[in-house]
Structures are given as structure tokens and as C-alpha cells.
Amino acid sequence: MHDHRNDTIQIRNGEVFNYVRLEVLLRNKFAGISDDDMKVKQFSAGRSNLTYLVKIGDWKAVIRRAPIGPVNTKAHDIEREYQVLKAVSPIFPLAPKPFYYIEDDAIIGAPFYLMELKSGVLLGQVLPNNEDGSQQLFQRVSHSMVHALVDLHALKYNETNPYSLHEA
Image 1: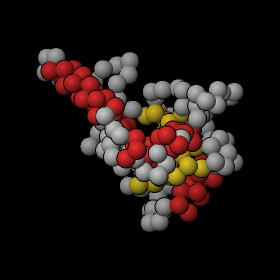
Image 2: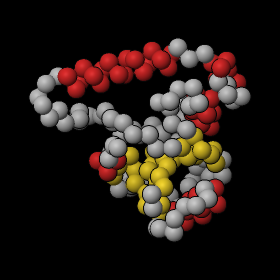
Image 3: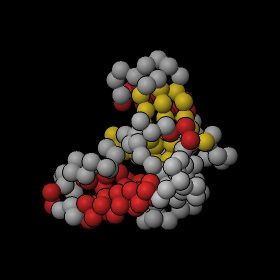
Image 4: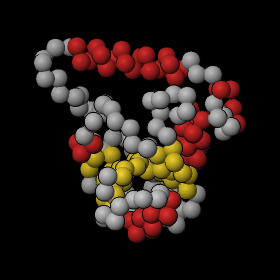
């Protein structure tokens, strides 16, 4: 399993939210979460929509929300992003399953959604460690990306769930 400790950082200054309200919501929405303390980290990549890793014991989820401050609502439409994932995830296994869309901005300061944590390679400014010194890893990653994009573009939108893409 992919170790997300290298992908996450302490939450950036100015991007912190109310943990208590979030924890109450999570414990109400997800039965069987342990009594362990909630831990929140921020994914280091990406600034367009903010992404956080939330852990309570062995339970994990990801939060996505629009950036802080004035935003272009069309460019940072969290509800649309949630609806697309809800439509695509049942027929495209690489897409994370979204759990809940929360419109109430009193929880973390803006509407957001919760989704499952998917493991994988996070490509950013620093490439993954290529221990054997060959280019085979980079070729495999490139081929995998191309195949995933081909599979994604081959989806038939009318075969998605009731929140289909043409309604989003």
C-alpha cells in the first residue's frame, strides 16, 4: 500500500479549519469509527482545490474544498466535482468513491466533499525515486497514464449512475 506520509504536510498557514465540527460530522456519518483522536494533514500537491487527509484510527478519507478567498465558482465547483465522481466511480475503478457532499460551510468554512483514499503515485515537481537507475519506471508510469486516459475517455456517459454527467 502507498505510504501517504510523504504526500502530506502540516496544514498550510491560513488553510486550517474547525476540526471539532468536522469530527462531530464524521462520527455521525460513519458508523464504527474508533475512539482514537482525529488527525488531519494536507496534501502538498495542488492549490486549485484544497485536499486534506483525515484519519481516525484505521479509518481514512479525503476532503476536497475550494481554495480560501474569492474564487471563480465555475472553476472551483466542488459540488460538480462530487457529482462527476459519483457518476464515474462505479464504472471507472481508478476514480475514488465519493461519500458525502456537505453544503454547510459552517463545518470547515466552505462546502466540501468526502471521498475514499486511493493509493497511487503522486507526480509533482519531484519524480518518484527510480532505484534501479533505468527508465523503465518512467515508461511504465507514462504508459499507465495514457491507458487510464484512453479508458476514461471511452466511458459512455449514459451508462453512469442517475447523477449522470449530462445532468451535472
